[in-house]
Amino acid sequence: MTGTEVLSVGRDAIWLTIQLCAPVLIVGLVVGVVIGLFQALTQIQEQTLIYAPKIIAVFVTLLLVLPLMGALLSGFMKEIATKIAGI
Image (tube, rainbow, N blue to C red; front, side):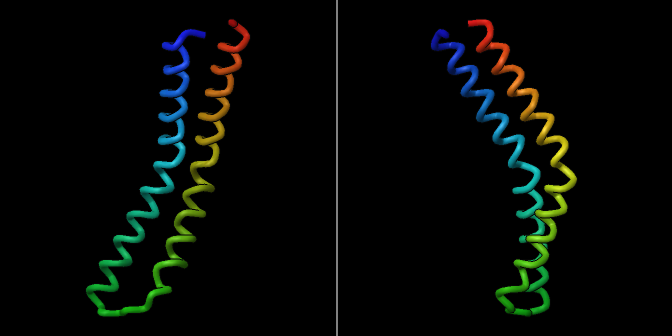
């Protein structure tokens, strides 16, 4: 493999990692901001209030996005296997 092909595989791997992590991170961020605003508006200063909704939201997001994650990983593995077979 040439240096260009290695960089291409590395770039694809980083992009795949971003695609896999983005939905869960975005949901966690949104839920955290909404609960933070709720706490600021109602002056409820309970530190543990943020954990349960965020955990539930991330778990539900993982359940919904898991087929997409599997398809993305499967496609990437097929691409890598094809490149390995072509060497």
